[in-house]
Amino acid sequence: MVDLLSFALLSFSSIIIVVNPLAATLLFVSLTGTMEGTTKLKVALDSSKFALVVLLAFTIGGGWILQLFGITIEAFRIAGGLLLFGIGMDMVYAKTSRTQMTATEKYEGQDADDIAVMPLAIPMISGPGAITSVIVLMNEAVGMGIAAIAIVPVAAVTAIVITYYMMRHSDIIVQRIGQREYRAVNRLMGMLLIAIAVQFIIIGLRTAFPILTGGPA
Image 1 (tube, rainbow, N blue to C red):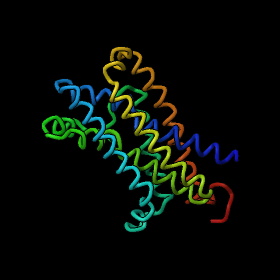
Image 2 (cartoon, rainbow, N blue to C red):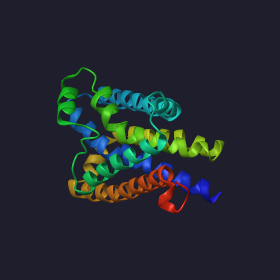
Image 3 (cartoon, helix red, strand yellow):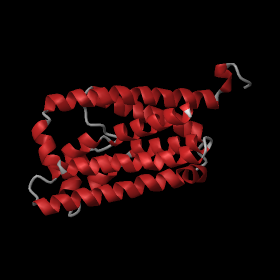
């Protein structure tokens, strides 16, 4: 029961932090500033739907995708930990993570008819970090039973619902949250993400190289 609770806390915290609803909301505000209210709501809904489909697809089929390319879960866990570590460092130093959105993607998204898909849904909400998290967490859940398996998609849905709610009420949020407050929250979340990333790497190395923990090579 304790292990299941710990896994649930890890799943919800890591996915929500990587999705970063606040950062997605600020980007949403900047991209939809000239749109009418109904259009903004449609963009928020469409981007949330598409991001959810992407995350759930990788939650369910991520393991098969790794097998298709001959990638072990240990290698993916270590690589994912390094990726999340980079995202966390960017958050701590108040930078926009290039693993979520590049300047080119933002520019192209502004010129596109439907910004809901790019850059909002991909790569801002369901970016490489979020995809990495759900694949690694689902692999962990498989050995813990049905309850743990159900936790990962529920955590993904929760993160997207929070993001949608914040985008839907972005006008109120932006009025109450200044740049200083945003940077403070972002740095705190970045520290938590770095800790999660280091844990991913430790587990990956321990599994891939048992000799590191005194086990048989």
